[in-house]
Image: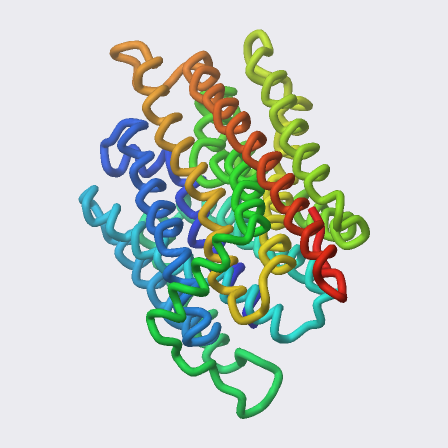
Length: 416
């Protein structure tokens, strides 16, 4: 039931990605203004992660899933009827606020319902199965949008969210122990101490930068700029572009369990997986951006297959949060980690929008392929920063782990 709520959250989150071209026409805005829709949604998501983590430790998963689901339904209702840019941005803010409460609430349920040895697989499966929402937000939503129009399409999205909200109300419990309720609300001093302890742990910051460096490329491609890049830059039809985004999501379903198995089998080599994913993503983008003229279909397919690994790769950051923190502060630590990738995504969405506008010749309504090339080249700055920070905090976490092993009678179970 909880994973179903996350599927719905991903659907609401990604619903703008394949409707970006239609949104630009509906609201009569340029690329930079269109970027503000996603930025507003993701900025609220990122800003709320630490507060939501604290609320999660205080009130439990069920209450936050219900609150988040209601906010996303309200956001989609507003987006369905919006004709003004300000109302549309407010609608995406509501979606981002509700989305912020969902994933880490589901991860807390995993932590309470399953033993630690199964956590890496179940966390990956949660993140992976959730991407089914992106499939619903691709071809079916595009078909409905073009067949029925803007308002019926997003009213249907709101109805789907309301149905899932009822499932959560009926079926979700915070723990498998009947009668056990959420922990007593901690005072402000305890909250501050838990946040400080989570942040002071190098493994938490390693998780944050892991999430940062692995997530943004695939997320930005799926959430907003991939569809315009494929349609306007590469000349694909809307159906073909949506199909490629669907292939990306299906590949994510396959990659997630593989990444989980590698992390569970080799916990001290998780950072190797992170660097491999980052290097592969940067390499395939280099080929696509350097290709003379429009890229062939096989290369675009390769791109989306590599980008499909980004989501499962970013989930490694949450495994670091679980490994290096006790269960009573998992919500706070997970919230800190979840900030990383969305801050990077916000930066890239804004940068792509600005560069597209600057590189598009005056008088032209759509960006040329060269504009998309310059815009997506911004990613290399973020990859360089993220990789350097992962290396830094991997070394710090290893030093701390070595010190704990030297002083503790029983070695801590950790790894990088």
